[in-house]
Image (tube, rainbow, N blue to C red; front, side, top):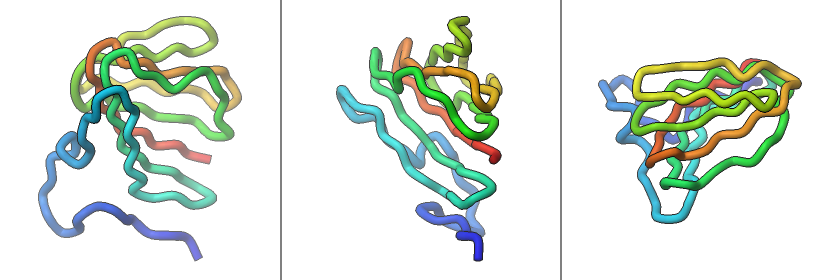
Length: 110
C-alpha cells in the first residue's frame, strides 16, 4: 500500500513556507510524502548552500516558496523567485543552489 502524507497538519490551512525553517550553513528537508509514484519534500537552503549535480528517475517539479534559488539543468542556469516554478526533467543532470536564503517545494513524479 502506498504511504500517505506525513509530517504536515491535515485539514488545516497552512502557509507552506512556514513548514520548514532556515538553519545556518545547512540544507534542511522535510518529507511530506514518498512512495513509488511520487515524492513531496519541502526544502530550505541557507545562502550559498546547495544540492550538487545529480539525476532523478522522475520529473522534478520545483516551486520557489521564499527567497531566490538557482536551478541548473543540463548546465544551463535558471533563477527562481517566490511563486515561480520549473521542471527538472527525469534523467537530466540538475543542481539547486541558494542564491539567497531559499525555500522550495519539490514534487517528483516517477
